[in-house]
Image (cartoon, rainbow, N blue to C red; front, side, top):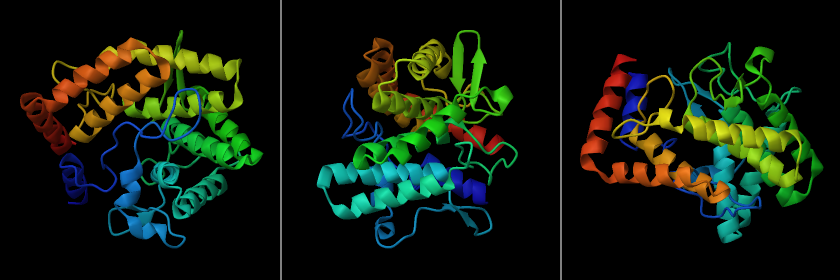
Length: 299
């Protein structure tokens, strides 16, 4: 029943963790400012967290709760964007609270234990590493405190380690896949969130060496595999044959829009426009919803 309720809320757009995440409102190409997806609704949906020291918790089966790094990173992005928009100190304070939690929870190898509640044997992933790095880079830009940039470097270094060495990147020939889950197929939204962390680190440091090379290599890989994330009427969630839910399809559109603005690569604009048309087509949307619902039931 727990999973059915969770999936129902996500598929119908009523989940607090799956709110609208359109293209970010405060980012600019060539500088680290706001985040590339709009995470502000994650803050506005639970405004009571702005008062006090509590951070978002993930509701688990059986009435248990846990701190989920990705949720806290994204909540931090939302707070930072709201601060940039309003200059309200309450958002600045909450952003820095998320940053401090991120710093404390990072282990000596630069990792965050993101999936221990779901897959305790493989708790690390590129998406968490990239988003954690993005949050820390913004803290560095905001405060000029070197410890945040140093921690972001540790996060990126672990992210780029090969799977065979316990890291979160799969290397095959000229390709490098940023793996949200190290034991599953490539997930598109997770790949892009991870890539943005690397992008932010390169932008903040001006690196022209191995990190810039990794950025270009992973961008080329993403472009090469984009056709594997679409079918005739909708976008795909992952290489595992899973179609995207309406939430993730909308997210894919926003990510393609942001990638086009950041890179100037026309292929991202083409996918953004095609998937946006499908998003507005009742037949495409209805068929995708039915397929996704069947997949969730079979799971």
